[in-house]
Each structure stands twice: as C-alpha cells, then as structure tokens.
Image 1 (cartoon, protein in one colour):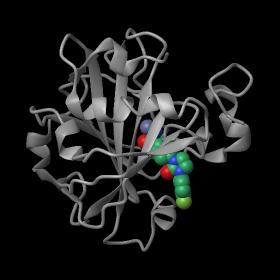
Image 2 (tube, protein in one colour):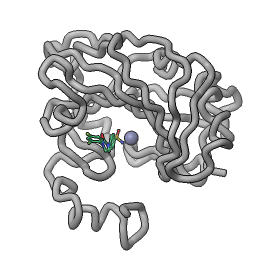
Image 3 (tube, helix red, strand yellow):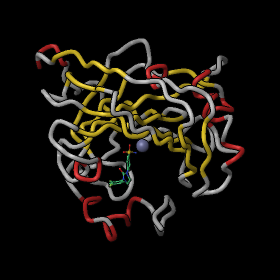
Image 4 (cartoon, helix red, strand yellow):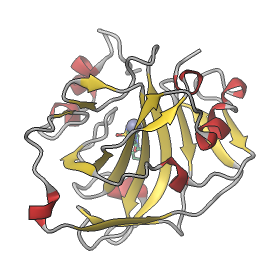
Length: 226
Ligand SMILES: NS(=O)(=O)c1ccc(-n2ccn(-c3ccc(F)cc3F)c2=O)cc1
Ligand SMILES: [Zn+2]
C-alpha cells in the first residue's frame, strides 16, 4: 500500500504507478518570480457555480478526509479551462502533524498548514470521471491553502466535527449539515495555474491545476491530526 514512508513514499511510487515518473507531476513548488501573469494570456474569467448538499458521505482515506460530492448541477469553466465545463466530483484535504506543514503545493518554498482540493471532471468531452482521469484535460482541481489563525471556518467545522466517527482508514459517515463548497473559496480570486497530475497514486497526468493565491483561515484544531 503506498504511503509517505521511505519504503512506500513518492520516491518509489513510480515502480507501481508508472505515471508517477512522468514529466508533469504534481505537487510543485510555485516560484512566484517566474510565474507569468495571465493578463498577457488573455484568459477568460474563471467562473464556478455549486449546489448546497446535505448528507454527503465523508471517508477517512488514511491520509486525510474525502467528501464524495458528485454535483451534476455544478459548473467550473473559463480561465485555463478553454470552452469545456467541469463538474465537481469530490473534495478532500491534505494536512500535516503540525500547522507548520501539510500543504502539497508550496509557494517559494513555503508550506501552508494544509490544502483543500476540489476535484472536477470535464463533462464536455468525457462520459465519466474514470474516463476523464485518462486524458490530459480530464480533471480540474481547485487548490486552497489553509492558514492557521484565531477564527475557525464554519464550513470546515461541519466537516471536521464528524471525524471522531471515522477514526480509522476506510470508515465513512454522513455529514448531516448542508455544505456549500462556494464557502471554501477565498475572497481574493487570484490564482496560479499549470498542467499537472494527481498528487497521489495513480498520479495520472490529467489535471489542470488552479491554486488560489489567498489562503483561507482555520484554527489549529481544524487542520492538525489528533
Ligand atoms: N490530491 S489530488 O491531486 O487532488 C487527487 C489525487 C488522487 C485522486 N485519485 C485517486 C484515485 N482516483 C481515481 C478514482 C477513480 C477513478 F475512476 C480514477 C481515478 F484516478 C483519483 O481521482 C484524485 C485527486
Ligand atoms: Zn489532493
């Protein structure tokens, strides 16, 4: 089973998952000095529309939590996504042992306390998530960094308040509250974008990454393993 130890971590993933040795692997360190600004790329505005859902299933993946949220009524389009429309499939979080680490992407070498990923698939071109994950423009993932501060994030609280029920890998439960993914996004909508991959096995090189520049604030309790 893959993990993050020397014997099953990223350095050996390519033995089991050939794409992990590819040319567009994520995560990356975002070097802000060499990132080109989108104004000269004439990009269309990135727009998103989500539904609010209740009774979403949350799973302990062994590396964090994942909420299955297939939303046929959701739309992510514009920006680097060309003419295609992407639909939300799931969202999940990466975090670490302390608030000094945990994000997958880093910005000029700096890690954040955690990182939320909203995973979407291209419904214009493909018939299923599984099919989309086999193509270079199949998925679009929105990344939002977590900063640790004094105010807690109410929407994240709805999620982490259920974790006591799913202490072990593979366990799942339903989130009774209504969740609106829009509330996870920062107010400042500036982002970096690049062509990359799934950050964990099978590491498919099928992701258009959109990483927001502005982190959202959560409390220490909301973003560290216990
Ligand atoms: N961290 S991330 O880059 O957002 C990320 C990392 C890994 C995945 N992931 C793992 C397995 N799958 C997957 C599940 C079902 C399927 F049909 C195809 C897949 F690639 C997947 O999308 C999904 C998202
Ligand atoms: Zn992720």
